[in-house]
Image (cartoon, rainbow, N blue to C red; front, side, top):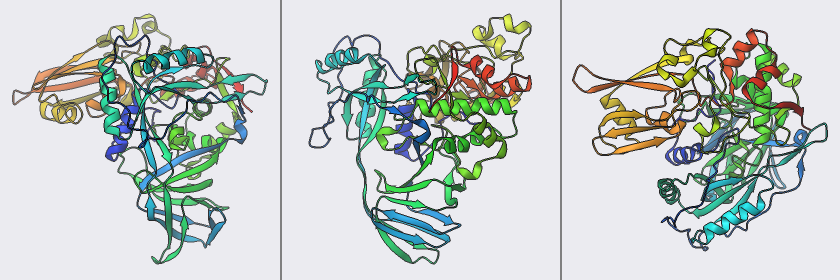
Length: 563
């Protein structure tokens, strides 16, 4: 089983989803890494103003809720599918389909749901530029006033929740995001974001559903006859797991299969007028479906326990955050966490989830942002290198080297020596992800780069500053039409066709036809921040316990149980 990382989100999707994904992924992830703009704008920035109030609803700034969430009772809303012209299910036992007081009982067998006179959900696109922490309400208000004085319709949007541990401690994961503008189209939001970035103001785009879709869904039997029509949304439930057809494996993956789910299944209308499918499932059942999708069930039990706690902490920390404006908590792909439902569960991973039930990591003030990656390449990365976020004391780059002569060396500071010969690390057991290479001709790299950056024929690639692990903070692509600087880990990887990581060097040599050939030599797979999955495996094989493994990758944390 191949590993997947929390932020290996570079598969392609239908066009509007690709752009939303890229905009959001530049600055946020399953671990709650957000963007702060430090300092004041030096002058008014020329961006497109918000659409008229007649086209976008007025949203009043809110204050964070003081309520404390009971995690054990908290259902998780997982978006399984969207943009579907048909959703096919197979029920092993009778299933009920409900909308309000309307109800239909489906006999066991195959059924499909098709949109019928659907009115699409309405949405807008918010541009956020800064995040404030709990207790910084006055600073957030002052920041908003500053932007309003320059003509921006800035406002505070609260996210996150508070939680109580078994010891009675309150953990506060609330955040205040600053929205500087709202747009009716994604193109407008992207244009404004680009303009802000030219002024060194880093932002991210979140689409927000402002009005649910409506209409009806036709419920069709195996013979193709319409059994009944019900108003949307509808909820499907059965005492046995329901199988869903054609579930994609990840963003842009051509591989689809049938997967089984035991929670409530909600079918609704999306902004495209097509159907979306969301499962409503208890937290521990959700983690049980995540664990075997993120880590092979045959790995050492201490590694499985470490991954279970990291996944649970990441889930709790990001409740009411990542996709809350869209009406659900998490997607089922690697953008949040890979989740394959009840059908993917394994005895060993179920045992690891049960053994750590309710356990999370905390720094004493909040649930820790426990992000994870497939292979750090021998050294983990600082969060601010990868995302446009301030340094998080929990997410520091640390060595994953095994004890030995190389442990005292400078590590990735000398990138050439770091990559070859490779050191002995806990994560070096997987040769394919620990060190890698990729060769691209001028034609190939030009085609890849120009999908997003119109640089013309690629002439050269200049490598910029590096983070703690050796991952690049920026690269400069020199083309025949123009030169483009690409910043942050994921956009760098995407620009060259989805490289395994941004820890690489580039060798440029003339090919047989005289045109340059670019050879990328690198290490690791994924962003490198937080838990290294291969490293956790290596440490568990050496006898390390799960709590020690977690403390190695997340600085200053302890374990707690949430209620």
